[in-house]
Length: 478
Image 1 (spheres, one colour):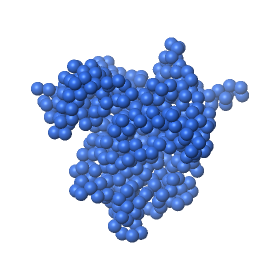
Image 2: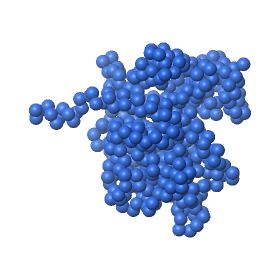
Image 3: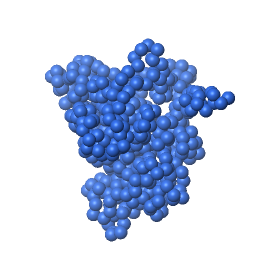
Image 4: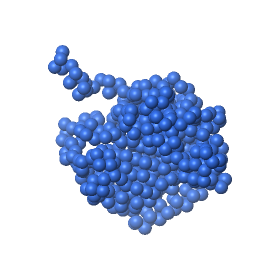
């Protein structure tokens, strides 16, 4: 009996999808299958198996070392994995023991840029069949289960900004192989500051074309491609999908864009604010609503004229506001991302909402009779782990529904309205998370402590670095 069968891990739909993967492997349609999982940072990791071995691994899983779960964003191991409990207090993780990557067959794709190569997203389990508690996809699935138990599906549409640069020097000399490695030298595709310019779009169209072609070939619901305000800045938007799909989509999209661009001699980055002269910060706007599982109606759409949200939508909105400050750790998990929160910049700087106002954190769109009624959260950075970002929205919104919170009036002057300011740094965000027990209760205190520890390690390394600012400020003067 296979691991999947022994622990009853697949639904009927997943079993049927696995048969289609086996057929593709047996027929020679694909020769190589990449087994991938999203780590704690939302980065894809995994192994690639040849067809014969991949067929058996579909149900038995692929091993990976638990030390991957102990790494910060520089791939440095920050937990003492060779101590008792591996630094986690868990026998499963002592000494770099293995966990299993178990495929979700419904995520299978054939990669259009890699010859005869398939890809499948995996969940993480220990050899005894228990789920790895640090799996961010697992955290998200638990939030979705809670939502489903209340009769709702989560609906999300993605609006993602990022940069694509010409790759001038990939920095592959041995001295550049530091940890983290030296970033590449790059050049622009075009000048910026002509928002939605037809001329600028045509300059970058060759890059748009190969990205568009392969993203559509993956089956992702791409809706639009735009030239953003800054030099070499793009925006891709995706149609609404439900439950696991939007987070899985974001994981695959980011990885695909980086791989496709590199194969064509370009460097794509979802870093919020690159240190490239004259570039602009990128955001990730998350459009969200709830759909009733019984009938599929939008639970945010109001029935009464003059209302822009139903009672459910209004309470959900209030929950997002109430937990906005600690939630920024999940929507904006990098040191760099907080440099985007600036007044009068089309980015939020405080926890407020408004009707169709791009200066607020939460922009409400729709109204009576409008099936696309939704809340757009403009706080996120494109490097965020989508499972944690979306899970933080669901649990916050449900808390607002449970407590029947009210969001207050619309903020029509977003940078002047009196409201709690968003954290100005990852340090402030972590302090807010630690001072608030809410996410510990929803995600599990063990997970929140684990994630905060990784972020603390990132901050500690940053604080030990001598920055360009310090050199300019002190070197000549003192």
